[in-house]
Image 1: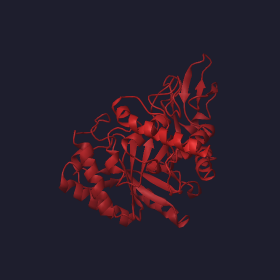
Image 2: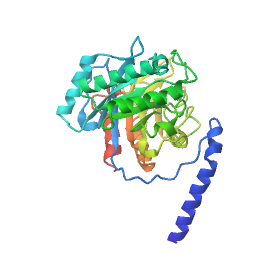
Image 3: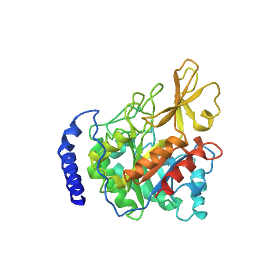
Image 4: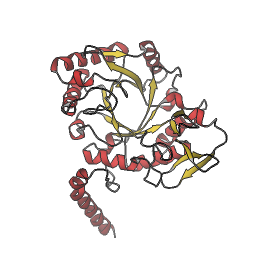
Length: 354
C-alpha cells in the first residue's frame, strides 16, 4: 500500500510540472493546490505592519516582525525619507522587551513614487542602497522591506517603465550586497503575483509578503481564502499558486491578512477598520462557507461590508501552514480592536498550531 501512495505522489508531481508553463500563459487561471514542499526550516513568522501616522504601540508578544511604514524614495532619487522617524525609534525600543523581535523599514506603499527614476541608473541605485545601509545601522534595524507598488505599473499615479522589473532585480541584488546577508531583505507583492521576476528574486530575498487583500468590493469579498460566487478578483489559494508557479518557494511566502474591511460606500465607508466594523448596528453578520470569510448584510439582504474576523483568520492560518508557507502578515496593527482580537487570532493560528 505504501508503494502505491508513493507512485501516486510522483505521478501528481509529474502532472503538475507538465502543466506549469501552460498555466503561466493562461491569464486569470490558477493551478490546483501544489504538492506540499518539504523543508527543514520550521521557523514560522507573524509580521505586523505598523504605520507612521498611528499612535498604537504594538505588543511584541504577538509578533515576530514589525514592518514600519513608510520610508520613501527621496526627491533626488538617491536616498530615503522616513515618515515620523521619532516613531520608528520608539518602535525599535521594543527590542528591549523582546530581543528576538525583528524590525524592518518598509519603503514605498500605494502612491509612493520615484522608484522608477531611482532604479533606472546605477548612480541613483548606489545612493539609495548606501542610504538603506545608513538607516539600518543608525536606527538599529534588522532589514529593509521593499514595497514598490508596482514595477512597470502606473496605476498608483507613479512613473513607470518597461525596464522596471529588471531594474528592480538589480536594485534588490545591490541592497542585498549593501546591507549584508545578516540583515533581512523582503518585499511586498501584489496578490496576482504580477510585476516581479520571482525566479531571480527567490535567490535574493528572505521572504515575500503577499498583499492578499483589496481584491474586491461589496458584494464581493476582498480577501477570500477560496473561490466562491462571492469571491473577488483572486482568492488566497489562487494567489499562492501564482507565486509558486512564478518561482517563489513556499518557504519564502508570507500570506497577508487585512485588519480592515471594505464598505459599499453608501452606508459604510470604503475603508473601515475592524475595530469600527464591530461597532456597527443594524446589520446581520453572514458567512461564506466556500470563501471562508464573513460579511455584513443590510435589511434588504444586500452585502454592504466585506472583512475578516477571528474565525476567518483561523482558517487562513490553518491553510497556509498546510501549504508550508513561512507565516502570516497583516495590514495594519492599529485597525484591530482594543482586545487584540485579530492579532491574537493570527498569533494563535500560526504559533500554537506548529
